[in-house]
Image (cartoon, rainbow, N blue to C red; front, side, top):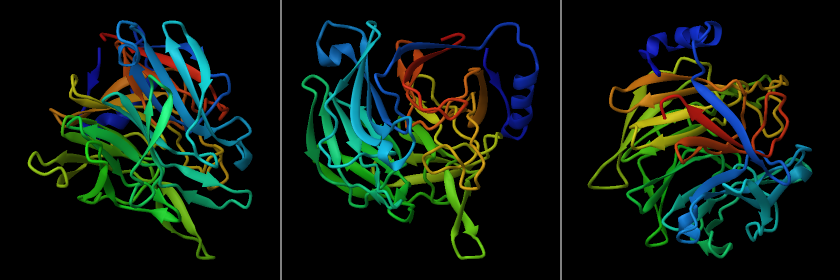
Amino acid sequence: MNIVIKPATFAFALFLTACAPEPAPLVTVETVATLPTPHSNNAVAVVPGDSIAPGEGGAVFYSFNGLEPGKTYEDVTSRAFACAIPAATCKEIAGPPVAEGRLASTAVFLHDRIFLFGGYSVTEDGTEVSTPEVFAFNPATEDYQRRADMPAPVDDAVAFSYASRYIYLVSGWHDDGNVSLVQVFDTWEDKWFRATDYPGAPVFGHSGGAAGGKFVIADGVAVIGKDENGRRQFGGADEAWLGEIDESDPAVIHWKKLPSHGAAPLYRMAAIGEAEKNRILFYGGGDNPYNYDGIGYDGAPSKASDLLFAFDLESETWISVGRSGRGSMDHRGLMRWNGAYWTLGGMNENREVTGDLVRIRLSGD
């Protein structure tokens, strides 16, 4: 049974969830399949089997781009994989047609295509470049069609679809700094337009999802100042915002600042919007912001969270869902299929890159 708590008492409730014995587990976790090569910070999407081959059933989980276990610039790839359920088999497929590997790309399944957005490349000297490419991947033929480039290339952004037509990219990193942009891709017209800017501190590695015309953005990493040498310092952004898209104009977003969810700010959580539950669900994430190897900007290792919590859009309260008992971080999205939640890849409690396709079930679902 879920516990509904007022935002001000959420942190205390999380403490109780961690320490008090429970009569029955709220969450069950199972590894269902494993990628041929582990990947983290990878774009993910799930496609129902009937969308690929009518009458086939099941589902296929996809991974694009990301970081392999060595966690250096040489381990940034553009490889792609497909994991079929219920067969529980994973295979490598052709990756996006780009010249170099990518981190922090974002994928959204809409209509019968997976739309794959940007990411960033890394060179030997540490130079990072945000990439503008947008591809529409056809799961039935496993080929990629180039679509209109992002006007401002961003990576580590939050992406979600709206009205079965538009895909929104909220904030993120652009080459050498965070941006407040909300860029919207019209999948019907293959065009971009700007929506109302994100009003919070510009962030990357934040998380969020949408249910209908409402969405929530939480946490991530912001610039918090400069050191004595003038170099920027990065830290967790303890912010959450509710956005509501204007029904008469998809370029207009009405923003409302929300209370913090009560836990410490988390980085690269897996998140998803659920219209049927009228909520946005968050899972995992790292407690200390890092670039891509799991070691914080301050030199301390990031610890993976196992928390699941949600924002209820009707009551506008944070909800403690439970703990998975399995810390997980460095995600680009949470997937929902067949009554369960799924992650593919990421980093575990030891900051090891994993290739696990993980099924998470909640009591009552």
